[in-house]
Length: 338
Image (tube, rainbow, N blue to C red; front, side, top):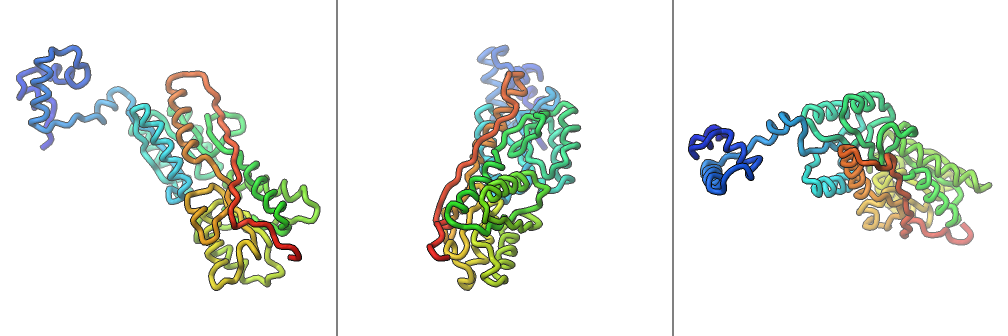
């Protein structure tokens, strides 16, 4: 049976109020009494019930974080950044994975509300933010991470994905490629749509360039492999000469499909650029060029925005970072006479 405050008070020969003061306001208790109570706490193995205390106070020391796919190393880095900033403030991060499903996202939001978290960092599962707005209107601060709302209704920290898509495809075009394929997840995902917009703008600026969109059900290695297998099955004359993948997981799957049996050589036959620059990008069989996002900084900044919201400090409610193209061997220039 758990040891309670009353047990400590009885063993120490003091009131319950004195034990409470030792735990929460030690300056109100004499050093001698505090020492006796602390000794009893150690002897009995008492552990304070912070959850109950926080519920009474109406606030916990926790922050909720909901991401669409914790299996994606990009979101793991976002979580690390969030934890770093939260730790600086004496808080912890509770992590939820929506698996890109609105229902699971809503369940996490409701659970965090019950837990009286200080606020929530959220990368939305879809573009339907009606439920998120209702949640925020109920008094729970919400910070969008890797997403923003045009009118700035919700504070957000994001990366300019249109610019990222443009950087990737302009690089492929500058290397001599002209038949570009954009392998992506559902276009209903805002990041996917924004990266496509940037890619299309780059292609539109070059008269003899063309862009093919290959949309997969999700942004995973398996779906990248499936897209790669479909490209390998085509006659070489009808394949693209470059691929821009909407994230690095898709790119890894594409590389797997291309390298099987040596069917497609990268970059000789098809040049490739991914997105996110996860740790695996530089360790693939052919080191992968990728558009780098400051993942850990996104999480850190998201928590920083939340803390400013809680403190009522004036701040920029929309923070947007610029992506950076990291060039590796997968997108080497095409050889003369291709």
